[in-house]
Length: 151
Image 1: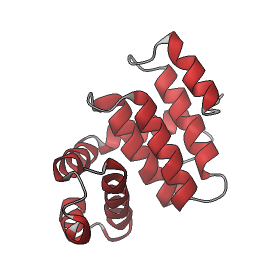
Image 2 (image 1 turned 180 degrees about the vertical axis):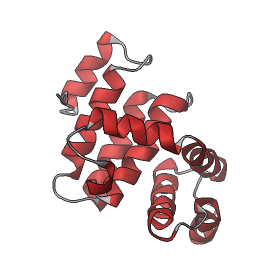
Image 3 (image 1 turned 90 degrees about the horizontal axis):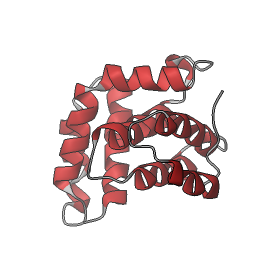
């Protein structure tokens, strides 16, 4: 199963949710039709349900990590990439933190603006370093990915 493609479908579904207030799970079931055999349907369902359930908490985490950027001013694509990554990073034990960060950076490069991946890196670096999952030995990975601390 291709989790990268699964994350793209999750991102499309959340993006539509932001604009149309549609049920992202229903949107995902429509978006997944062409890729049903390639994606991880259970993962898509788990992540979308988790983001919906913890949306306020996740958005608070974004605000705390990027206080100079009100949520309404963050590009919708960046905000939804962050929602996916934060759910995976903080609430999903079957996704290693390195994978969540790397996938978010790649989604930012593919779908965001020129600065999206740097912004996403900074927010996730801040959140990860303050999480229970952070271990000092992770610093080498963060340096490799050029994840910087946000002040």
